[in-house]
Structure formats: C-alpha cells, structure tokens
Image 1: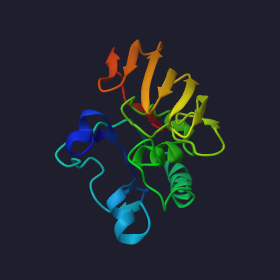
Image 2: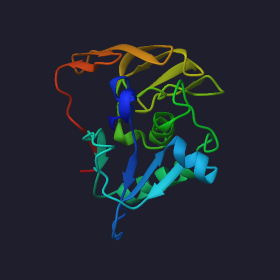
Image 3: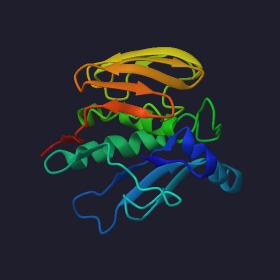
Length: 196
C-alpha cells in the first residue's frame, strides 16, 4: 500500500498484490487503476516489476507476505481470484470498486495472509451484491451497502464502521485506533507473515 497520487493521497492509499512463483524470474504485480480501464476496457493491470516500487513517489508499506512451502498453491489461488474479479470493467475512485476493492477481493482467496488493509484504503469495503462477505483477512465478516455504510469485525482487523467510505475502528489485539486521513494510530503493527 502507498499513498494515492496527488491530492487523493491525503485521504487514501493505493494497494496492489505481487507474486513470484518458485521458478519465476520476475515478480508479477496485479493492480487496478482507472486509466487502464479507459485505455484497454479492463481496470486490471498485470505487470512485471519490482513489488515495492514507489507509487508516484510514495514509498509503499508491506502489509503481508508468504514464502516457502505452500506459497505456490497460495499464488495459484491469488491468480484465480484476479481472473474472477467481478469489477474488471468498472472503476470509481469513491466509494468503489477501485484498487482497494480489488485487493480486498484477492485477499479473501488468501486468508492465511491475514492481511489487514489500512483504514485509508478507501473502497476496501465495497462489496456490491451480496452485501455480506468474509473480511479481507479471512478472520471475520462484514456487511456493507455499496461501500457507503457498513460494519466489519474480525480477529485481525478488530471492529470497523464504514461511513461514506471513511473507516472508524478499534483494533484491540494491536492496541490501535483506525481513523480517516490518519489511518492507524497506536502501537506499531508487524507485517503479517505466512508460510515461513
């Protein structure tokens, strides 16, 4: 995740997923962006680049990773989730579907990552229909009305309320508050790791 481009960076982050199977020469980066949709008819972008490249000058933060045994099977599920993304032909900065909607969708196929998307990942709560789903970390569930109003509760995320795309929450396991603009405020969070 990295702060979004231009003024949007004050409010939110852009997220993406990077994978590298055992014998691959390069990382494959999967992300969604609006300009890709306008150029090609699909918002999903597949690229071979460094997974931790800056996003328009913003340094990214690693949210979760998996290495070693089982990683290739996890990558296969991630690639299938990318292929199954239901909003490849739609992009809206607010309330979604957008890059964060895409990453939340992909993460639901990889619950062992236990990834907790930042409170500033506007669009992460956009579910479309149905209005209920597992939380992106796979440790709880959420209800949401088109990214505009909802609740989420999960072991990894804590409890979150989504109002007009803004996330307010508390993460008791990590002793942190989740706030619009500021993101996560509290004890430093370690990167989730799986498969070590």
